[in-house]
Length: 111
Image (cartoon, one colour):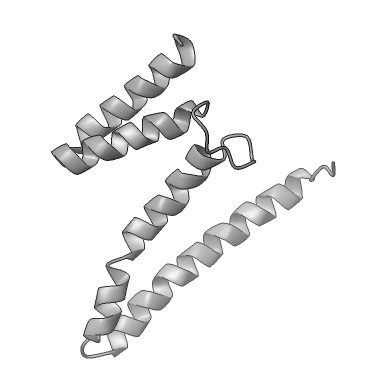
């Protein structure tokens, strides 16, 4: 396993920050020059938060150890599934987080 120098790590962090900033500024610059945003673009941009949330949530749930783990032994999958049901039925973020974390805690430490 290769080790990275401190300078390399800081350069990677700075590069990521600059890239993220430029990406955000580019959308502001583009939409500032356009009189009206096409409805199709607005429609597609509405899916960005859900896509980002899925990209953040699904990998740790479906592959907690780096390999796909879709089985009854994956407590994160069970907790995530119950949290999804709670989110669907209650539409409450607090209830979803509480149930998901509670179930994960119980399955991890008690069972």
